[in-house]
Image (cartoon, rainbow, N blue to C red):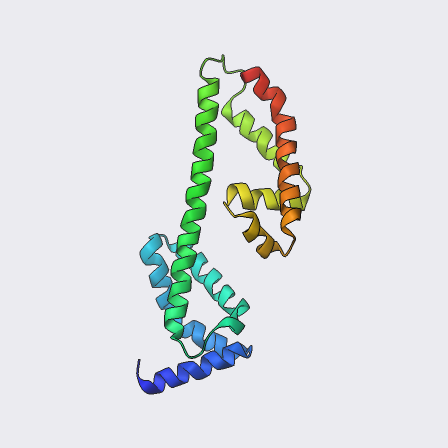
Length: 188
């Protein structure tokens, strides 16, 4: 980057920190293709790369006051893209592991049965139970168990106390256990 373009970029970043929409828009159009290419390099999926770029620029706007204008904006942006990609991959891996473990458990315990209840029926019962939970409990359960977020991350995301997250998770698991216990007793 030439000295003049570095100075111009720094001015844009300073304006962005001051909540200037036009500066954000200029930086967006200046870097969106590069951010997309970087995300696509790791993900190899167009829609996932687009989602990551959208999330990164949203985070960029939300955290604009934390940006250091003396450091490379490009470096900051691409590091944010990389971290977001890795976090998304971690969530997917956690979700896959959770589903696979549940499937292994069910397969192990259902092998000798005369198929009184099918896996689809059980998953329908689980989903129905989750959908019948109060909206906040449902949201917290999905974030924790299906997206792999920690209680601390959920606290930050939803702006609620960690004890509230723990209480909702405890109640959600109680709800599932109450509904599934009679069915699993038949299976086991």
